[in-house]
Image 1 (cartoon, rainbow, N blue to C red):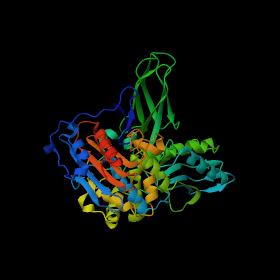
Image 2: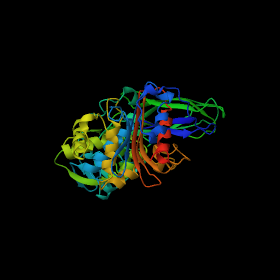
Image 3: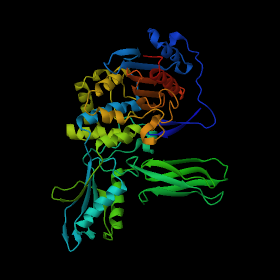
Image 4: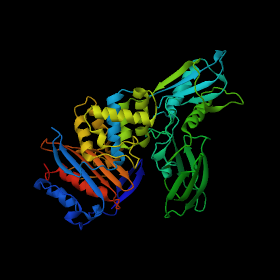
Length: 498
């Protein structure tokens, strides 16, 4: 059996130490699913009779990588929800339109004058969408301000996020996802607590108390007073259960932490979204300025405000390039990155940092490179939407076309690798297809939503006749359908299918 762990909209699958994975015997009839009549795919046809697929929609497309010939399909032109396989379309269009060297910038401006170390005027922290802005970057910006001779600021600290619009959540995001990092708000000025780059979030760290019956100890990364904790935890006996949750109350920055943690147990880290990431980031920058020894007035404002034209720049910081950002985006299936990239394409190409404009850019770009976008519907960049619709034949067409692009090596490198347990190699595939012929030979994007399981990518064959595949299952009731997909992909990696 497997243990499922939440990560983005993915369910990361870890092997249980006590049991081996088993496949359920097939009981579904042949008539319940359309099968391909080519004998070389008999193995796949048999897998498609698995009882877990009964009542579900299973779509498959397999192409030869060398020439794009469609070798096998099952409902290949049927529109289905892709979950995070949608990120393949987002990554490809971002590379095509923004370029692998594209960076996001954050800058500090002022409308005042510096006299004798005192800045008489306001500070503006201006964001241009960087989803990788960390404490180290804020330190760099604050140090640059200090190096301009500023030791005291006699004014307010504002955050300017007008690079994008002020719509924080994509149009189909479930309300129940909003308190968690899977549904973090999107802003042009945002902050990531570590190098997973989950922008717009804070890490809640829970430590056991000294003895059973005590509350757990709770800390925040980064440490701040913008987020508040309601501690409803309890430390239990050493052999007791660890069961912890952290949920932010809607419309606030109060996070309720509940559950139990055993005495002597290891700390637990839980990512939670913040309410209004722009002001959160400005608060953190205010703290950083103070840590640099820059004095602030007794009374001042920390708010959102558009930078006036009559300002000059004090500091600027650039993000890692897109080719590096694609690794956490695709390997860890980072939802926020998908939405930021849509808005960034809207701003840079369409002159409006919105989902509407960015999705138009995506559709136009994909159409230009040879996809039939009129057969699909894009509603976001991450795949969290249950209204986004694609076909597996168009997914494999994208993967085929990508091979001819100059950015293809970057695209391929960003995909999770089956059975590689190093986190930034295997990503969401690191515990799947381990110790099989597929280990290290499959690079593919995973996808998981309620009732949706998907996988699409490339299979390296020992005979050099590599394959491209896309498998998307919709409307299933059994979360172990990833198991069915893995059986098929292992077949593709072996000798059963050529």
